[in-house]
Length: 142
Figure 1 (tube, rainbow, N blue to C red):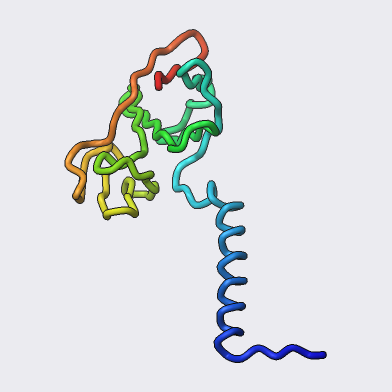
Figure 2 (figure 1 turned 90 degrees about the vertical axis):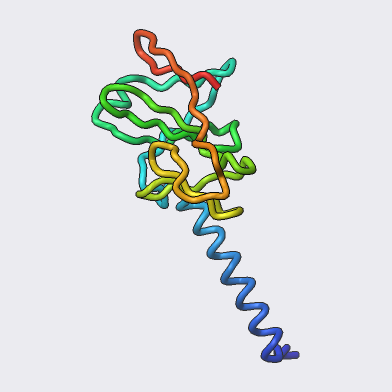
């Protein structure tokens, strides 16, 4: 027996199928959406270690710790490191990076690439993390 869908059910079915496929593709290509190179890592004892050799010839790097619910932006500026937590200072929502900075999809705050507020409601700049350097690594303290 052949089953026929009415127009409403057909549209609902095809939209749900398309959204599901789009979500799967977006999750597979999530890192490809970032305008910055991504380093995947795992922290140990409250520290993220990034080999200094991997930072050569880089300017801005997205650090993705698989155990954290947020990304970290590592900026190299004038030989110094700036390490930003990519959570909105308004209500701790995750930020999306773009070529001009970072956006919060919850209430529309935006930050420049240095972590300064460009557009509210956030009033405070992004939180910065401390770091040290050992013989081989940049060590970020969480």
